[in-house]
Amino acid sequence: MGPRILIHADLGRVEWRDSLPSCQRLAELIGWELVIVRRQAGDLMHRWETRWERNVARYATLECVQVILPWSTPSMRFCTSEAKTKVIASALAKRFPGQPILNVTGIRREESATRRAKPVCAIDSNLATGRREALVWNPIIEWPIEQVWRTIAAAGLTHEAYAVYGSTRVSCVFCIMSSIGDLRAAASCPDNHDIYRAMVDLEARSTFAFQGNRWLADTAPHLLDADMRRAVTRARLAAHERMRLEALLPRHLLYVKGWPTTVPSDEDAELLASIRRRVSALLGIDADYLTGPAVRERYRDLIAAKPERIAVP
Image (cartoon, rainbow, N blue to C red; front, side):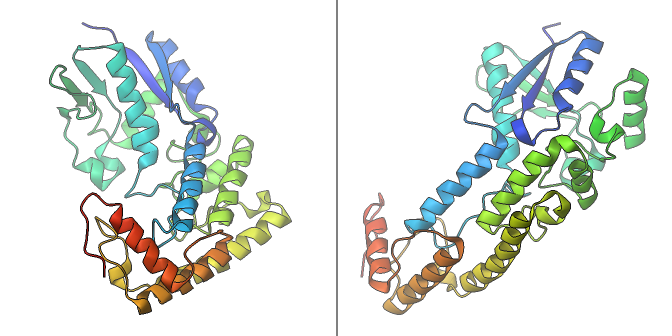
């Protein structure tokens, strides 16, 4: 029997204050070492913030034709892959070089359609290499939720998100996958008010709602001051206009693999420039390439810089 540890990826400001203490209580109960890992480039809120800054810069320099949202999404969960999976896998690989690793998780089939299809055990693609065998084992995958609660209660363990605030799941305090009920539960915890305001501020600055069409600002507007409520109102209007304008972009101008594939016609370049001027004004972006000729010249430069040259008209 090899060493056994618990490992927790700390997400920083977006995490429930009781998550780390809950892990520590579990470690003390079973007598295992608790290893805590963190994304070295900053916490998850920092990731969203810097993603927005970089996306603004990309739009300003016409490296994309539409403004890109700051948030992770259910189909683009870099929050999980970068802040949890990668940092955990890296820590385990360094801690147990060349040794086989059994990664035990607590996912259950009842949780989602994706998890319903998961096997009980499989090769862990994040850890397995030609020199290291690694498996992921999901021992409670068939458990109903009632069995989970009974087991937790019997061990004398709990988490404030469940016991105090009535949440149905614990992840980030405000998660892209959360129900409206869980968002409200998180907002009812005073510890979460600062990160709530920071996230709403990013909604307002970016004009992108946190959950697609659901604005986090609507969860607990009483926690926002008058200036922020006005900023959110402006952001909603700007978001509607941004989407209306970007819907005018011809399909062949939108991003595809290998973009850009051709220089737009004079007419398309003028349309794109017009949309860029109006979207930039809406979001306060100091953008370049705001005339048709400038757009065409930018496309020529982008194509010329590609490894495989495309004929430029």
